Length: 68
Image (cartoon, rainbow, N blue to C red; front, side, top):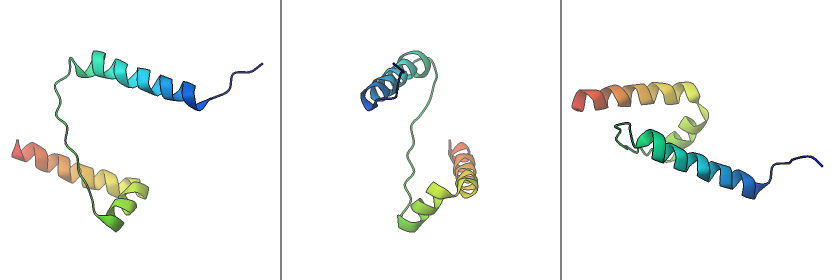
């Protein structure tokens, strides 16, 4: 019998991984949570164009550093 990938097992592992990160990584690391939203076609384009997304995030990140 081989081990397959079942949705419930994958969900459990994802949950355990996220809890471990929250408890052991984020609890000792200072961070802030910022969410950017983009309208319609731009959101779709950024979802598929990694180079464009990297450029946009670089500009937004540098702008945030200036404002803080």
